[in-house]
Image 1: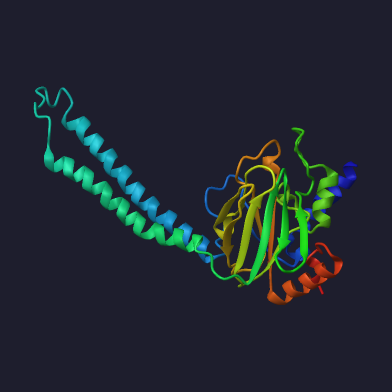
Image 2: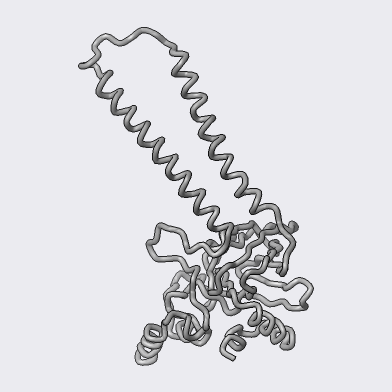
Length: 292
């Protein structure tokens, strides 16, 4: 067993060109251990959000520096030693107007940039592909609307609910067989959402039991899956590759173990995959058409 584990580890390490060699797709949207930045933006929505975050960070930093400098000045200028006789006035109209009007102008400025980004997210365009996604405890169900294709997506190695979430040799073997690496543990699913690059994809999101949330950080999308309601999100992936997401709404014991995998492929590969999956009546590994 130890030898088997060692051989599997070597295969994952040297075969890593990451999942590129096995999947014929580069892993693009993967969280980074101890990372503090964003995943690479793969859609216009994600670029807009990351730019907005950077702009607001500059404004917040300027406010923090200004307030800190003002506090330091007051401490030095108006302490008991430097100012033994405090002033007796209670109002200063110019200052009161300034600290009221100033924040209003800052918020209006931020709103002028953030509202267009919000509207772009919420105004759903005409789709090239519509997929209904349903969140369950604890997996995702996908239905390609109008294509007579539906399947479920479980985390590879699921379920991990017993407290011991270390990767076993059996799970590592499953990851490698599915074309993933050790780094994809707790991220990869046994099936994936397959979409064509450069096409508008609309996801119809709902929940089958409790509230879940379908999220792909590299796409800049997140939508709660509420039972009894059908919400929508959209994205247009600009880069082929593998992208990972997670359920982002606390939904019970195994909430942390219902990841999302999206594979963006060329339009030709997508059409071939869709035809093969419809012929089989269920999900077909997209690698079978990428390697042909």
